[in-house]
Length: 78
Image (cartoon, rainbow, N blue to C red; front, side, top):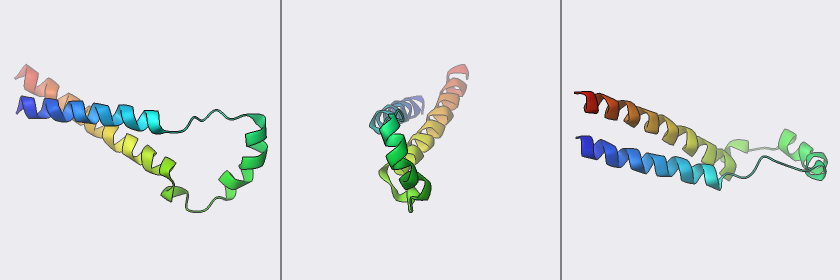
């Protein structure tokens, strides 16, 4: 059981690392702020973008990573 949870833990940690590295940078210059401000404010289907999917994947994999961390601590102490 502990080996299975450890393998899941490694998979979830790699998913977290990969999804964080694939997300675009949030640092923009002044020209991007002026020209792209209306697009981000009035943009439609924001939840369908690749960025939103990566954020969702990051959140889900982080939650699963924390859960497997707690399960591994429990299994190690018993």
